[in-house]
Length: 173
Image (cartoon, rainbow, N blue to C red; front, side):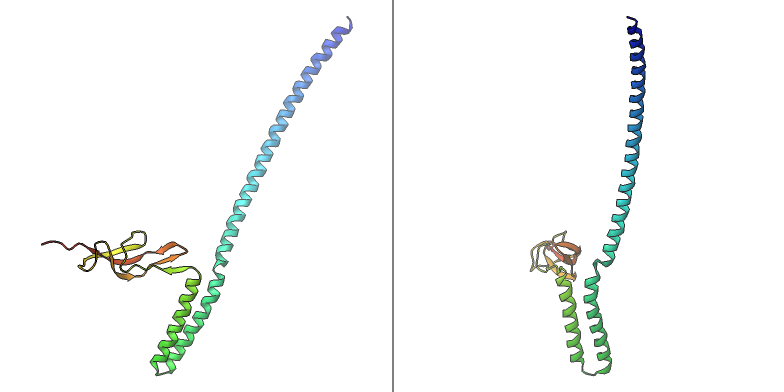
């Protein structure tokens, strides 16, 4: 029985020591989690900044290919202007400018630009912007009768609505 008090003291001291060990490990774990959180936050912030930089760089150079193609059109316009200054044959100048215009529109169409066809169509506020309404006996109400400025879609997205004149019912007098 003399051994019992020693065992009790041993148990009590072990319990206290284990409690300190548990507290210390909980504090260590909290510190580790805080450190991990700070590191993840820093990594995410770096990722966000890197993504923004990459997006900006991509945006700067995304149009590079179309610019290269448009430089050919630019050169052709310069040649057409020089030719127009040196010749009296207007028809050849017109033909040259038409060829450059066709080259230009070909590049835009290849990149997905499409002109909105709207004359004679029903007015659609997603495609058209009504500049004025006119009484028109030959057209039904709410029909596009004239295009003031053409509209364009880029890969099915309207980038500029067509500015149009729309028919309305004649007012009875």
